[in-house]
Figure 1: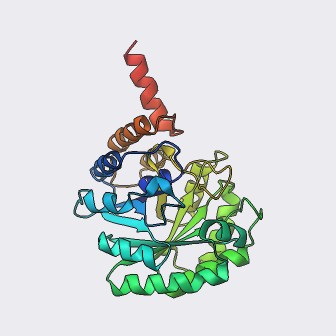
Figure 2 (figure 1 turned 45 degrees about the vertical axis):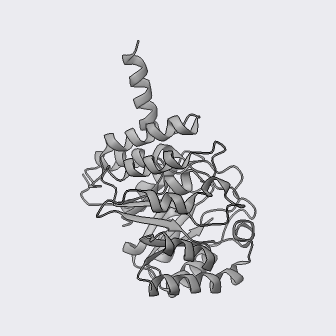
Length: 304
């Protein structure tokens, strides 16, 4: 049996809610984040400081970030696209700033409205100013394993983009399977290409479960030395600029896997499923989390 510890990055309040058609009330977002803070999670990405014209579901970003109850030992992060977003994030006293771009130019233009080459200097300025303000910085690379517009993304392009972000001074790099097309052999291929230039302890994996391979990919990355994983409670998620992308891997499904492997997470599975059930009722649609579905089926059976 494997023995180790992994760090779970909960991205549900941001990546999970950004694509929801049902608008979630600000007070419900705050209550959900407060609930997540009590599960043992050490990292929660609470919102995104993007123009509300592009992501209306997160238009209340400042209110959410300012009103949540901050628990000692928990890092509260937010996505920041540019200088204006950084100013708002600093006003809200976010603990960690997350910058993002794609490994494919077409998706980058759709998502950020800039070419990849034009994005690098913008992000470099954000990283430098965030660091000057005493904040840690995380970088996301989207479409690492496939692009909804260009199809396959070359390993060379992934390596180039990742190196450029690391050179800016980010503390951690999250590799995104934005449209959920990766299989374990692709996970291995990318990680082997990157491990010689980026310390494995500074890499994280961010997978979507569009084709049902998310947990297999998590397990493969774990076996290759990755110890940081993104998840969204309930399996929420999807990208407004990635047609067909399903939700993130459900955080509670990853917890179940790691618990079974004897891997320490520090997070309560039962409380995480409670939080998934809470947001499930707010979004008004079924969520794909297997552990949530097991809970709901059990509740239904007990009520018979």
